[in-house]
Amino acid sequence: MTNTILMIRPSNFGYNPVTALDNLYQKKDTSISSLVIAQKAQYEFDNFVDKLQHHGIKVIQFLDDSNQNTPDSLFPNNWISTHGNGNIFLYPMFSPNRRMERRFDIIEYLKRNFVVKNVIDYATDNEKIGFFLEGTGSMVLDRENKIAYASTSKRTNKDLFDQWCQNMDFDGFSFIAKDNNVPIYHTNVLMSICEHMVFICLDAVVREQDRRRLLSLFNQTNKQVIDISVDQMNSFLGNVLELKNSSQESFLIMSTSAFNSLSSLQKKKINNIMRIIHSSLDTIEHFGGGSARCMIAEIFLKSN
Image (cartoon, rainbow, N blue to C red; front, side):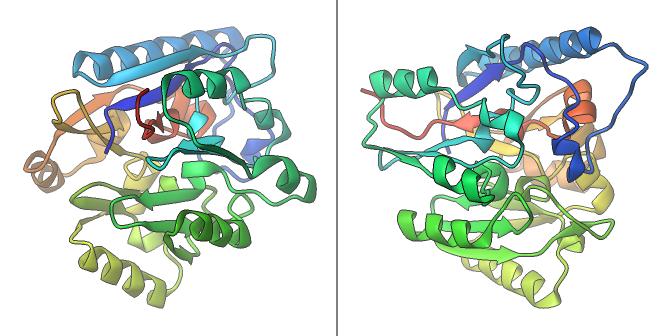
């Protein structure tokens, strides 16, 4: 787990009709102006960052480029991931207007301030042929045990996933997960891997043999399983992330809607291991179809 993260403050956040084609969690609401939506998202973002920083988590913050049509720019974990071996991966994005989110000024910042050995571009060639793998939205990584999990969809190409696992010397496990009989657009909607526990909506995993295999892997890696319901998944309880602060204290990061969906027993299990930080992300969840984990790109690079 890391104590340093990258976040992008949105300029023109709003409903993206292109990503809504396969993101069931986005909602359209024409009763609110686009300006008000953008302002509410900025307010939620700033409150969220303040809470993280208050608890000792280092947030590297960039502003979205207001001249670009990038309504989903506050979800950077889909276009970039960083790794302790010095690798930065750039990922191919399903939505054309999300491809403009890739920021080479951010990559240059990382090169100046951290040890970067390779920048591996999966994006350029694969976008041309319609193959997509949207970063740690598509892949949920157990970095400690070098296992990658992926629910395949039009945004998560199995061949690219297998190639990534080979490049990073990870074992990969892919499966099919659906909500209302529609493939779930990102794996991090239904599951999150923490140091000692895993959150997963097993009811969304289609095949019984995949559910058994997942449980077997969690058992082998000593993860306590928090099996969340479909309703809890729709409240973004699968979209959580464990972070550490500068004192190496562990925190589970989530939205207030996810927090409010927790049962008392689930809260107790979490609080036995780590503290919860939650913040209201209602506007971002409603119009963007993503939540707390989606807003965070973890920095695992070593500092210069």
